[in-house]
View 1 (cartoon, rainbow, N blue to C red):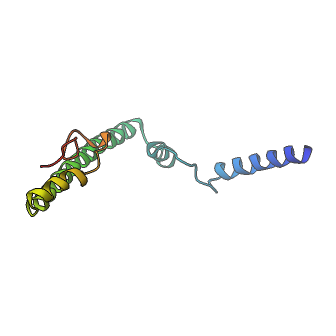
View 2 (view 1 turned 180 degrees about the vertical axis):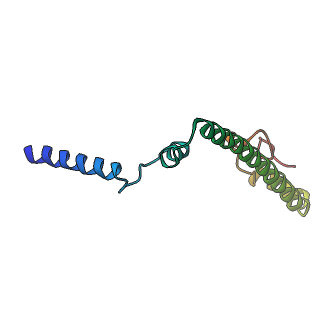
View 3 (view 1 turned 120 degrees about the horizontal axis):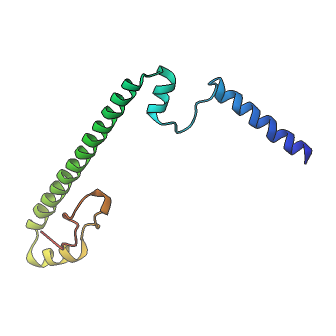
Length: 119
């Protein structure tokens, strides 16, 4: 038991020294915190960088939503084109057997997969 405790203490001390002298990177450290530590930002710089990060997040989120909307539109159009090639009997089976998977909620509002059975 003494050996195990000594091993834990040595391991803790070694890892603490490794992080302190940057032999190991700190995992999952926020970007702004790393910039603050490494670049010694002024309060004004930090605020401006935080604003840039926030603006960029907003723009990227909007791009993601726009991409998802365009993707849904393309899939809906492709489905309609395929369905148009089928006979009425095939269309009925297509609508019943080849329903698209339901859309995940975090990807936006209703679309092609929102419970519709066909175009």
